[in-house]
Length: 394
Ligand SMILES: Nc1ncnc2c1ncn2[C@@H]1O[C@H](COP(=O)(O)OP(=O)(O)O)[C@@H](O)[C@H]1O
Ligand SMILES: [Mg+2]
Picture 1 (cartoon, rainbow, N blue to C red):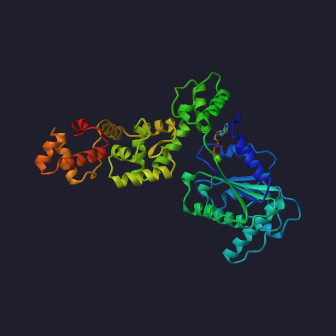
Picture 2 (picture 1 turned 90 degrees about the vertical axis):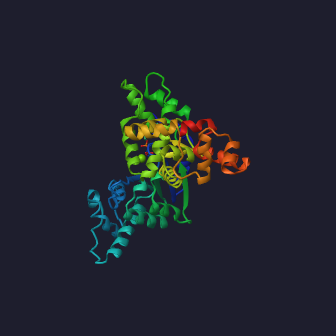
Picture 3 (picture 1 turned 90 degrees about the horizontal axis):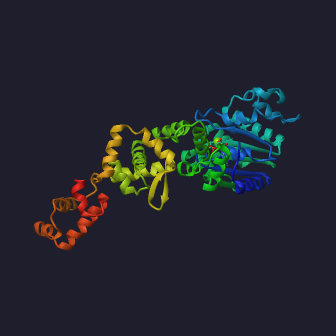
């Protein structure tokens, strides 16, 4: 399969891994190319395992170590790994006797992993998708990170948007005495997207606007086009996105749906208005949608889906009733519930009836200046730019 771009990242990774022991953190959204980048590395012996949403205890460690072909003369402590690694049990020393204390046995297991890695050096242990790490592996990684042997590297990949507290803690508390390098992978540039599309498709197609440079989206869209299908959201992307949407708290989901219905990235106020929520709900929903990577900040204060394909997928997932409701609020924004003060409500009600500021001032015994301020504030809160739009919004 063709590989494009990432020259700088590959160079940096190669240089870093050549100076063990080092811990490398590779962060990037799903499908951006973390696994692929590691596959493109040359000359670094690796053992690699992935965390899984099922969070099997020691799952990624078992996956990585079962492929090991250790030399003879291993430390007897590595025998503790026998029950976990039947695939290579014949290469390991006999299993030591049980210890009748779970914590002590666990420590022996951890030392077994350490000792096996030491025997395999130079080696790089890769644990992928640590946002799904199980508790046992997390603790083992914390242990390994603290006493990484000479000529052993540790590489962790993860999606920041799916991280939860214990993993953040693991990453935040990596031991300072071991070098660690962080690498954040961004989507491909427009030129790189074009180059990849050229490799994948016979004719020329501009996949950048729909995919935003996400390699997985480029590949899937190219596959659809090659099969003569209409450009649309590839099923794999659509399903992955829907799963993530379903996992959101309701306020965040509604904000993402509002963003998907809007043509352009929008501010918190507009999103809250279109979602039909209270300001504090909107704020909470937006923060969560951004934290979980469903929305991103495009320009300061404006938020939208990451790629048009994602927007399309979310739009398609909205039920007709909700879609109608959201569209209605886009066409005629109403006030997000509870935003206007009672006075603003009173003033804006009269303005919507067609009264001038002077007439409103007289009828409410206010100064004209005060009325002007109330009208301006209320219009802003309603997401309107002129009072002429008021009759429409009523
Ligand atoms: N730089 C690249 N050039 C070409 N294809 C790429 C590139 N990066 C990723 N891909 C392809 O995109 C798909 C998703 O990449 P992957 O590495 O699995 O993403 P991640 O591990 O970040 O979820 C894979 O099929 C991969 O081969
Ligand atoms: Mg991957």
